[in-house]
Amino acid sequence: MITAQRMMAVDANAAALGVPRKQLMESAGNAIAREIRSIADPGTSVTLVCGRGNNGGDAFAAARFLSDYDVRVRLLGRPETISTGIARANWEALSAAEIDAEPVTDPTADPDSLELEDADVIVDALLGTGVTGPLREPERTVTRRINEAGANGSGTDTRPTTIIAVDVPSGVDADTGEVAAGPNGDRVAVEADRVVTFHDAKPGLMSLGVPVTVADIGIPEAAALFTGPGDLLVLGRDPTSHKGDHGEVLVIGGGPYTGAPTLAARAALRAGADLVRVACPESVAREVQGFSENLIVHGFAGETLSPSHLDPISELAEQQDVVVFGPGLGDEDATLEFVERFLGTYAGRAVVDADALQVVPEIETDATLVCTPHQGELRAMGGPSADDWRERSDLAKSFAADIGHTVLVKGAYDVITDGEELRVNRTGNPGMTVGGTGDVLAGVVGALACTQPPTQAAAIAAYANGRAGDLVVDERGYGLVATDLIDRLPQALRTDE
Image (cartoon, rainbow, N blue to C red; front, side, top):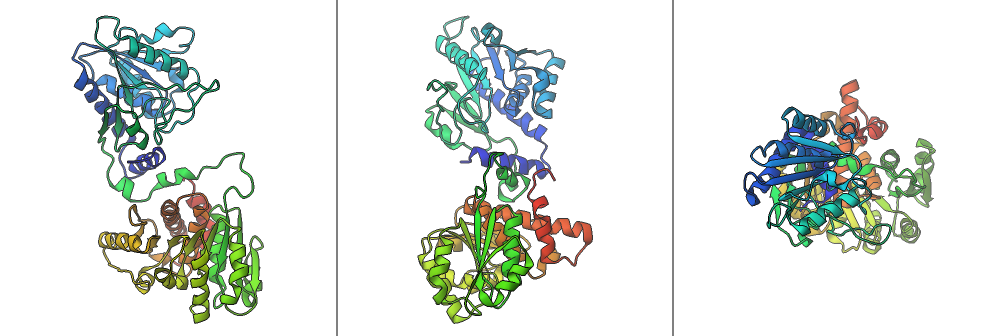
């Protein structure tokens, strides 16, 4: 199963791997044509009702594979408003092939222009999996006309009209199978007799009670396994966002070290958190604050954090969306006891890094944790390690399942897994062996975990952190420092670079 959002990411990652979107659309069109052939004899009437996105483009491509059928293509809208270049190219190819393809600009005023009444097969290619909410006009009216034609059967004989939906019936939520209520409370969606969807089944299709064909269109497994630019697509922001909507992060660390918690905190800000606080020993609070006026620093008496600080820090943590625990914290016995007691009572989301990691396998916690060890730290946690990333992936997956938390094992190939889902990141370079890059990564995970599920946050963070390092090295060569990554994070998290 794959959600609509994840499908968009995989599709974009496939393009980044060099699989042309045009090729995927051609394969999708071929799959639609195969579905039609499986239920209708040559010579029967097929009307493809198409939207202006890639869902319609798939149907444009399908029409070219149906030369032995009586094919009509009806585009809902003007051709110049087709939203993608590949869909537009497939529309233009219909004219060149002299296939009956006409735009329908006002179906509410002239519903007969859809020419559905005598169709043996109607293909619904109005809207794809990425569209949610109630149908609007003119799709609403067109959907009703499709359903009426399907219920009434063919106008040429007594055979029933079959409705085939492309990817998902228009009006149906691909993730839930639900149909949203419109302004008048009515729920309108295409009443498909069968669905042809691509790459993997969508969760919402299972509740429809109709045959679903899952077509392989050539998206490689690597597009789902390896992180890529498609993973960034979930990071868009609502223009009406308010302060706090994108998360508040608390970094708990410092004492023996001042740079590590500051790097993590600054990285969380650059990765999109609205507010970042640092809880650290009073002995280093002034230094931490001196690194950036953008941070809110809370100092606690002493040179290291200990159980005596548990109550006030726990109270502070409860007010945050995510805690980043461990950068620069040290491994004194009292500090590790503080870590144990904090995680034992904390029930929120936390990123655990550095010395705090060794405590995780020994505690019971209601917290949702993302652990970010390198291989040495993983071994200290009692976990396995391996040089080959494939073997490491299998071992890490098993370890994550055992401890019940998401792990991001850092390396030339980062491995991200919660024991079920597995992702691998290949961005980054040997220049990132410099100290502090792991602290930056922990901060990025913290920021993204405010708005994303744990495994997704860790996968995107690994991709962006490595991409930031690659941008630095491309410009300056090796010799980067961790603060260079922080400055490049906004660029690394953009989808248009």
